Image 1 (cartoon, rainbow, N blue to C red):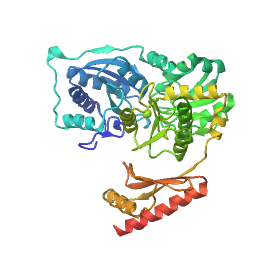
Image 2: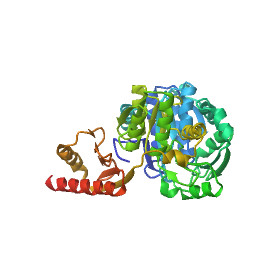
Image 3: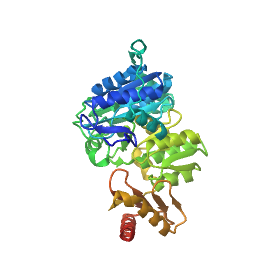
Image 4: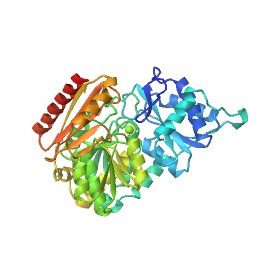
Length: 455
Ligand code: MG
């Protein structure tokens, strides 16, 4: 594991027993416990095979510093985040690697407001860890481990208070859930039953080897659920990532929709009920999101890419809705974090209230075509190339919040952004037709390559 830098975009991640071992997790537990200065913390985990092992390790480390641990066991990340707030805890630790393959696991540290800790707080924990500044408690001041039951039920109950229950129940929707063999399967099917739905599940057995599919719900690996939705003539399909904070939807025709499209439906629905509100989204989101916020008179706030930034911006700006293109929707009235089950309930509410099928709702939205590209670039040249690129850009409508995003007059757009993990610069183009999007990738790739030759 990279020295002096343990936390990535969403907590600590690593290959089990290679990069991330129980020894590291115990020491990290004591660093986190020292950071929280004792207090009461919730611990839970997703379905990974290493979940119970790392939970025991983190609990050993935390209780050694005098923290009391309320152990919730298997639960979706948003259910644990909700429980932290609901039970007035000092914070929590979630053992999950979210959408990573099964051989990975990780640690997410959550603050008392249910949101992952800030970058500054991560550095505090890293410093305690690397300087071995953990403060261990006296033998008679050790923390206790208390079993905490019922958080998944409390979470389902809370979601139900934010939607028009009778309208949804009346519709008797048939929904297919692909839980990806992880924790989405222990909450959403039960929530849907209480929403009067007929529920068909696939990959709903908990199995940390993830035999059904990989935990990242990308359209190309969701073919099973798409064909089952068609075969059983369901109204909707939903697939979750490994810790069930992200959800990707499939319409009644078996068409899989990327997150921008369903997020835009939620924006419209929200702004009609709550005029002039702020909507928070990373600069990587589609122009569709921008169009929808403009059409329904909301105020759009762009952020850097990353769910913690979206949560924290929402909090700072007192915004009630946020979303990402990967299927993460942050519904503030419930909680300011991504929440797959909450998002599912909102999509059903929209279908019930508008009396429309998902395919029809999406069909009515403006259409954009997306293309991606990349240019190889050594780590030490990334800063220079981006600076030079920025000097050459003459457009007025541009954002420098994360990489460089340019919006053109004909509604096309391009985002040029250095990868955080690979020696490449990534390009994301979108336009009203496929050819135009491809052209933008070609044009800007050549431009970057030209600049690269001069530095
Ligand atoms: Mg996740």
